[in-house]
Length: 495
Image 1 (tube, rainbow, N blue to C red):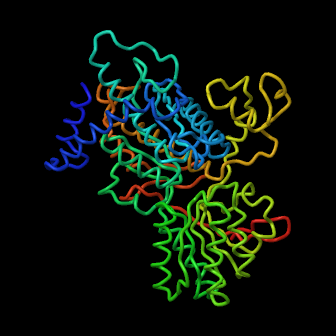
Image 2 (tube, helix red, strand yellow; image 1 turned 90 degrees about the vertical axis):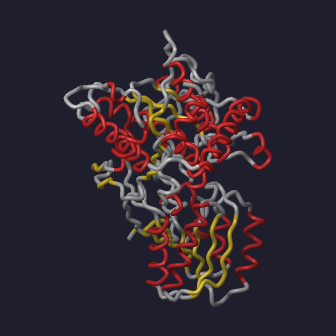
Image 3 (cartoon, rainbow, N blue to C red; image 1 turned 180 degrees about the vertical axis):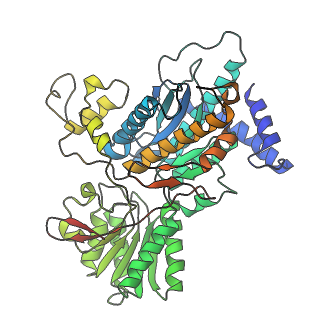
């Protein structure tokens, strides 16, 4: 089966039950041409990407932001920034160790080994799309090889080039950003590959007519916006300013907030947006605008996702405007690494976040890792040297991950997304392979459209004891506790 055969197959079945109309077939044809061109140019336009690969009977893909997004002067090269611990390395290790636990559990997919292929999204749409194309290319190459006699050498170097015998991914975990998730879903759904996100909350993604193969273990921004309106209403604030970052997360969230606020009689004095990687000069310009609405609009509602290493301008809003409170969505919520050093500016603010307890067994695993005992994570040596400002060959021997450790606040969601995929596959195996242990011919290869049906019916107890299930939009329920930031040495008081 070659590439155009796959496109022809898509044209016959489509992403919906009805036949594709002529215009859709033309769109698929031009998409095929674009994808072929992208594959040809991938090696020329970007740096060679590192890939983490663990073999298995079934391969689950993942996109994590192992590195920061490209700096402004490197965007055209798609050259990523520094390595990240919480959003990157911790999530890679969570994927690997969660699969270890699933593979060791006789109650989930007995006699079936789950493997993974993890790629770096760099929290950037262009890089994530490039890596998603690599996932698709691997699938197409695997399909071609399955029809060749004698094909199937074991994979060797887990680089960007597809390897003979490499299995395609059956589904994808991630990515974290809503804007990036939308770009990735637009590609994956053409090939019937289910996607389960752990922190992409844009309301746009609830539209099954546009994003049929997208699911998430978190609720949409609608619940978050409702929580923010309830806080504003609770304190009888009726005249507020509203700031959000560009992109689907900030824009759809703020749109919902303003609509709900209007119904509650809350007036928006001024609404504005800012880039997620904005510097202090951009915030200074916003500050000038907001001062015009003083003293009436003394509350600022933030729907922001900012670089965690540049939060001071956000906190300065409340301090300089003498605002009663800043109400902020879960972009930095209870993250001490974000508020560290900004106690005076942050004090008095109210944040909300999705409820996710720390996962103790992840700490037990992660804190024992060292470069010499962790060869399966190809980014780990780079991270270790970056974290401890040392060279592995010389002076890294005494360092430990326990130093200034903080678990990723969305760790539970990442793990629940992985378990969702595993339970969906488990239920699929029980129905399609009755009375059998392991995979049967009905799951070789795995039909993504059938897998989606089983994923949507998944219902299990999550890592923190919560009930995980999906509604008709592929969304999961969630709770948003509030945190009051208290001045003294910075303390998050939850309610």
